[in-house]
Image 1 (tube, helix red, strand yellow):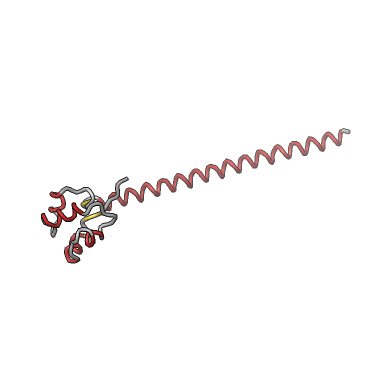
Image 2: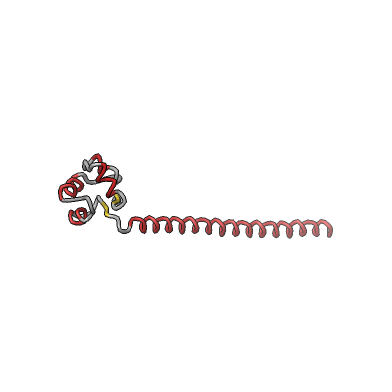
Length: 119
């Protein structure tokens, strides 16, 4: 009878250690997963910041005023009026089709403009 009780206690103790080891592994996995998600979130924020920085100084053809558009070399009153009339633009290449901006003018301004989308 004593042997039976000792065996049962040994199995019970082994089971307790196994459960605590599994719980520790699960906590470690949860922490690792949280760190991975946090890293992904940080990477997305960095990418957004890079995009915003890259867009800094660019004129948004979807929201710029006539004065802002005419300040771009190669865009005068006539082209700025066409750009405003053709809004909204999904991308800046639509300036050639919607606003009928000639290719040579587009080539001069393409690095100075962007077409931001409403959020």
